Image (cartoon, rainbow, N blue to C red; front, side, top):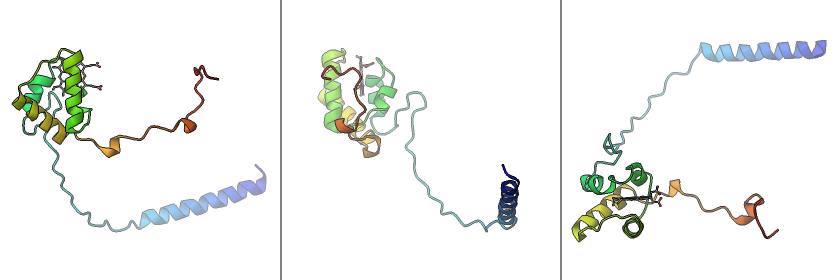
Length: 138
Ligand code: HEC
């Protein structure tokens, strides 16, 4: 750094420091913050399932094979949940439910774990993807 550059830097630094300490000397009066109370749904500390109506039926039927996390991280409409259940019944040995139990399970899942736009994003168009090094067409 040249001598002049050093002087400019030193002066600028001093000015900045001066500006900072001035602000610190007179903090703005704290504004009254509005109190927002959001009722969080109660969550079972063991499974993590939302403790809404029918949650115990879901705990009994949906946690013997895998963690409840597989359920709570998933989202879906009633139809999508039903499709997942049908898939487990066809491929993963999930037992059949009587109609009433099944409709309670589906209602619980669709109400408490509905599709959430904020969690999803559209697939990236192929044109915006990086080149695929494994592609056999090039
Ligand atoms: C009989 C065993 C069994 C029961 C009971 C069971 N599942 Fe599953 N489920 C599986 C298996 C096996 C998988 C696949 C696990 C994996 O991919 O590692 C799975 C996967 C899942 C997935 C992930 C699906 C995906 O696309 O990744 C969800 C969600 C799920 N189960 C929800 C449920 C719900 C809701 C219930 C209760 C109605 C339930 N499961 C009960 C066996 C079961």
